[in-house]
Image (cartoon, rainbow, N blue to C red; front, side):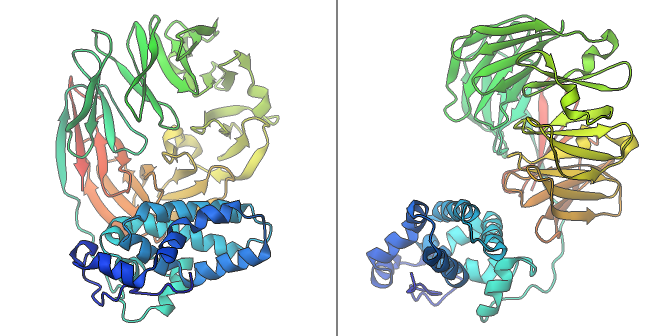
Length: 497
């Protein structure tokens, strides 16, 4: 693809939207022959089919350091921005498995993905934006800026920018029983007449439903950790739906007084108020596991079902960990000769985070081997709870909040990724967008800020209506979603733009 270059279709006007180029089809035929279009759309497919080769690695590296922006421009003109994400993700995977990979190459691909997550919409509308807005607004410390900014001429330079307070609007939902999709683009809301409605988060408009259900109200809605399924429950049953098609899965599962309900793979795991644990097959509704747990009555309310694990406090101010599938007590696998004060699991149940009695650091362990992962994380020991460690929607990053700072780490390795981001006030919590490019932080009152993760710059600020409420970022981090912890009969969510 050595024929790629900036402004390949000779538009000569970087302010034009692609849709405003009246003869775009003719220009594409003239300047972008069929073989080059095919190469731009398909190179990553062929790359993954090739056995490891230094020659291929060198060619791929040369392309990344020479024509990466040119390729993104072409994909915009071809109206195939999704192909950019796909190509970069394939390249990420290919590089990780290459024995001669160099860190700088991987950083370039990672930074380009971050750039695309931040600027995919303007680049989709106007191909020249990859040069004229994306690069100037990318952190100078990023690899893609270091590689490509010196090669570009006559592009704007960022001088300064003021952060305006976020505007907000309220959206009223017909029920207080709600749960947000993994990407925070839609919300599942219990229908007061029975069933579940699917509503657009930004507008509150009904986009699907009501989905069939029992005649009585649902009192809880939960998503699987990967966002592919969701279920609704009340005192007598649990119903599961596919989160893509909204089709019901299997038959409603009939049970009594479910307390915590979790979806895991092809099963529903239920912790009842009477301390019974039951596991049901979704498709058949068959009960496959059923047993009672022994817990002190004073602490029964605090037993937490986290995926396939039960975390149980004891009168001795310690923690017991039960594998829900078998009922086995596996606490000793994670003690390392110490006493666990707090414990919680990553959404995919591959990591467990333990705070020990004699420490002010959280230790990350591999769930299956009990092996310690990475360095321990310094926390506020006397003011520590699960809200101080927040996982990204995809579960690959987590934010640790301590005092006036928030720091982002890799879940798999425990290594620091971004931060610490220091503020002038005490932080009460944080949330990452699903793209992991925006960070929402808030204090114990009403103030919140949204930060650009790569640069740490504040991109929005505002005041919440309910200081006790829940706070989320939308998919691309361009909206803040807040809703009350203790709603009335119906639910009002506030969207900050």
